[in-house]
Each structure stands twice: as structure tokens, then as C-alpha cells.
Length: 258
Image (cartoon, rainbow, N blue to C red):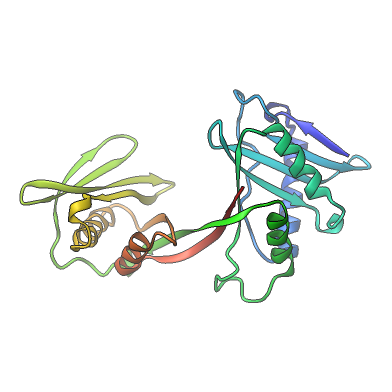
């Protein structure tokens, strides 16, 4: 039977059971996927956490991450010993009824990654399930990383203006005394993250993006040994820029939407 819990009602025992199922699924399927369970949704009215129990044992769960009032991301796991019993469908349809005004997003490991070296039947089953529920492929989301040892340097650094706050560093590129774009740098657990890379539209495809990012990398590697970023692979100009700068993919997932 399905049981429902609000986020604040989750006990440590329920959370531990979710981790048990997640780890069992990851070991059985040979892949790791998006997982979230202990976020705080105190102000959200719908049920963000559901679980399915048989004989008082949790055998599956679904956890929701509300992006906003109209879009949610979810993760769904069923114990590998209890699959093909429509447990996932029951959890999914209950979520849809609770969040009926929302659009839904779910991610799966990228089956084209080198890390997934052999055909994975369970991954195909998950893709088939999403397609059966009406989801369509939306994008490939990549985490890319570079270490200080892999940084090749920039021949001609760009003039920049740097604004530092407690939360982030905003680096603005300057050409002919005019701002032409920016890069934002944040830090998490001693790893720097670059994001919101923007070049003025009329100045794109002239090499300024590469010069600005490489200059920012040079400054950032003065303080950090690793820099990472997230990019949609289908955004070819951005993806190709980061590859040219020397970033390598170390994780990627395919995102499906409904």
C-alpha cells in the first residue's frame, strides 16, 4: 500500500530506509542517479514525499523537489526485488494528482557515457517507464571539471573588473574601456564553480568568450585547485567553449520532461 508523509513528518528511520533502497538500486543497476530526500518544504501544501510499503516494509519511494509553483523535479526508486509490480506507476500517479497544476522533470544517467560501459537493462526499463508516462527527452545536463594541472593558460589575458562579495565573485570583461560580458564565480566546499557566463550578443563569436573564461580561470586557480561548471550539452556554443578551454565531462544525465 502507498503511505504518504509530509516533509516535516519524515523520521530518521524513513530517511534511512530511503538510503537503503537507493544504495541497493544503485548497486543492482550499476549506475547512480539523482537522489534527494531530506529537503525542507515547510511552506509547500502538496505531499512532497510518498512511500510504498508491503507488510510494513518500505519497498519504494518518491521524493519531490518543487522548483517553483508550476515545475517540480522528482526521484523515484523501487527496491530491485519488488519491481514490475506497478509500484512505480502507483507512486507516480499519486504525485501527479497532488501536483496536478505542475510540469514534471526527471533525470536518468546518460547511457552514452563512457562510465556506463555496457548495456543496462534497468536503465532501459526506467526510460521505457518515463516514455510510457508521456515524458519526452529534453536535454543532456553535464558537469564539467578542470584541475589546476590541466589549465593550459591564456596567451593574452583580458582586462577585467572584479567585484567580490561574501557569496560570489563577478568578473566583468573590458575591451576598449567598455564592458563586454561577465562570469560569476562561486565556491562550494573548496571547489570553485563558474556560471552565468554572458557575452554581449553583438560581440559573440569573436573569441571574447574564450579569452574572458580563460582569464577568469587563471585568477581562480590562484585560490582553488579545482573548477567545475554545469552546462546543457545541446547548448553547443557554450559546451564547445568549455571543451576548448579544457574542461572535461565527469558526470552527465539525460533530462526528461512532462
